[in-house]
Image 1 (tube, rainbow, N blue to C red):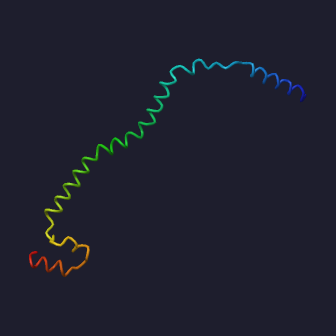
Image 2: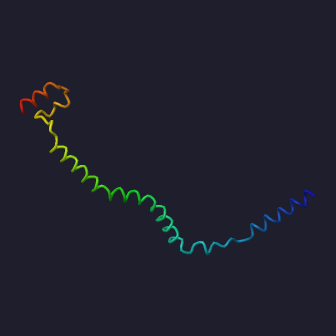
Image 3: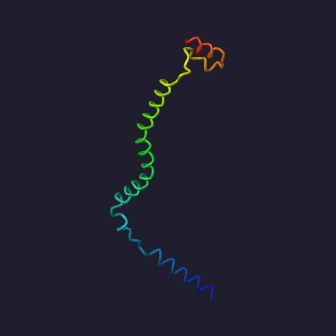
Length: 100
């Protein structure tokens, strides 16, 4: 029984080895399919980068407007640029009272 199965399996393997595979139709339009696949994969990445680059001028304009408004409407501005960093509150109060 086992010999018959082995012989049948050997015949099946030899028949499979003798059959030539036909790859003629797989080569047609290979470059077109490959480029379409690559373009489709890039499309997902391109949407985020396109939106981010389109929004850069709007965000830059917003930052400039906030900067100008902060500069113009800052009532507690003193002549000393480092007064904020030194933490010397008395100096800031005296400069406000003195009008410096």
